[in-house]
Amino acid sequence: MFCKYCGKEINNDSKFCKFCGEEIGEITIETNEEAPEVIQPEVIDSSEVTILDEQIEFEKYAENFIKRRIIGIIFRILFWLAGLYFMFLSCSYSFYMGEIFNMVIKIIFFPFTMIILPIIALITGDFAGWVFWIWFFMMGSYAISTFYGRLRPVV
Image 1: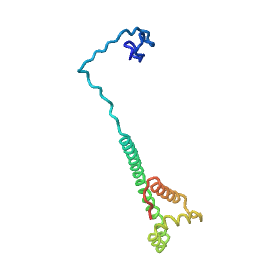
Image 2: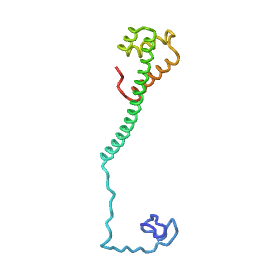
Image 3: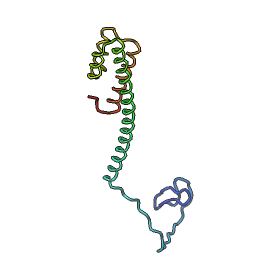
Image 4: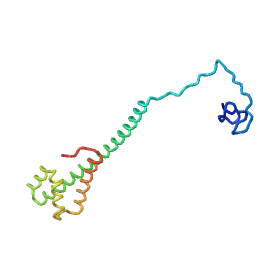
């Protein structure tokens, strides 16, 4: 039973409340046939909780995936823009030097021009400073778009 003064639970045969010290006296309980029904809390099945947890986890994964995809697409666009600029510089240099055949080969084998030639030039020391930074930006954009942005590698 509960104390009518402080509301704490006490023994059924107590005459005084051990918490507030008030005299309990005799308690009469009136029964009312029209008493409202006690609403029992709804029991949730553990499989429903698991499904909700999985749904929340999937939504977080999907949101993260979309953000990474957007970042990947932005950096892939930057990669291609830097690559085109790098190709333009390389081919225009060959054109102005009168190496038309070299320019055509660079265009035909553009992956070689964009990746292998800069590495060779970097090793031999023939790489101009600001051209290196364009190439470095291009390769960094490629790495970010592929590995962080989860886009497929360019073949």
